[in-house]
Amino acid sequence: MTDSFPRPRPGPSRDRLVVRLGCTAVAALLSVVVFRDVVTDALPLLWPPTTPFSRWFGLVTVLLVSFLVLPGVVGTLVGDRLYDSLDGDGDEE
Image (cartoon, rainbow, N blue to C red; front, side, top):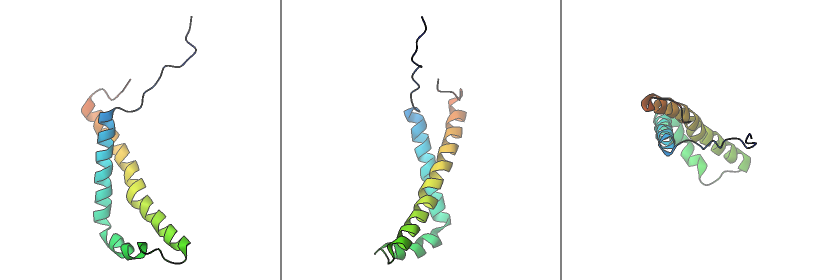
């Protein structure tokens, strides 16, 4: 008799997540260091929120994407490559 339920596929291991988080933190720190002039120029614009609110919200969105989301994507890709090269087998199954 065949099993009608698919085999469960657990998420990434704790070690892989730690490597991803570490690489993401390094990528985020590197982007802040490289673009420190942008950060220092934008900090006075963040608080207090400016009028119109949509301009302030747009600035916050651009800064979050450029300093958190993009390093998160790069850090995850680099972290997975690094983990797979150090792990040896490159497959979690």
